[in-house]
Amino acid sequence: ANDAGDRVTPAVIALNGSEWEIGLPAMAGLPFSKSILKYNKRLMNCDWNEEDLSFVEASSSCSILNDEKLVYEFESSNVYSSPDNVTTKFYAKLFTIASHSMRNEGDLKLVLAAPLHWSNTSRERLVKCAELAGFDVHQAISEPAAALLAYNIEESTEDINVLIYRLGGSSCDASIARVSKGFITIEKNIFRSDIGGRCLTKDLADYIAQEFKQKWKLDPQESKRSMIKLFNHADNCKHVLSTLNSAHVFIESLLDGVDWSQNISRARFENIISSKIPAYIEPAQKVIESFDGRINKIVLC
Image (tube, rainbow, N blue to C red):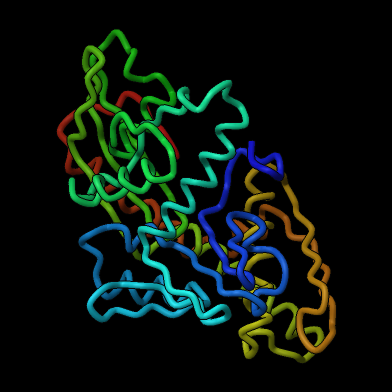
């Protein structure tokens, strides 16, 4: 567990003055008092494109300079950093968390999971960052393979075909893997970078904004500061609704000093995102249709 006792550390980094904040601390506090970077992983792919660049810049409050070398400009502190440096800082944080539960640093051996569509060069780049942070990296494997290993599916005594469906923050992919005598072979894969959990959060944030506007005749969508605050609360609400039937949203001073309090049920959330569901199902449907065989297991990650 990390400093907050959570098993998951969000891949968000912020520079607050001269202090680097990683995970929940980076997302907390006043968003306009520091430079925040999200989705750095997309630019760790050596084959990134302009769409990736625009997405990361739009999601973050730091600038991206792409002259001879890609660097982030943290304007609040006049600091420049590359995607590799940022990734190393992430791994250094994870190294610190892991070292607290180990008797000695020699036990910190690591197997990295990278997106299936990444090249070997991109994976090597990721490995180098982890090693600079202190980890002893044994291997870099694909994310679908890592999902199967997490559930010990490779130990199956029978030959099976597994559908692995992953919904990340900014992307989604569906894969079919064949598991035979401990060996994992990825047979099919469909990757989409235009849909992810962030789209669902945005729909929920837009819904809350409309509810606020209807009651107070004030539009949070006209204020970038308000929408950043609203987006963070909507994201927390979404995670609560993944396990509970309802969630309470309270946002202090959402706009012009007006607070907002609202209960949102899981049924309401499902109704809000209902138009998006077909797009999320599509990768799984297409990968199944393209595969000539029977699916024995399904893994969601």
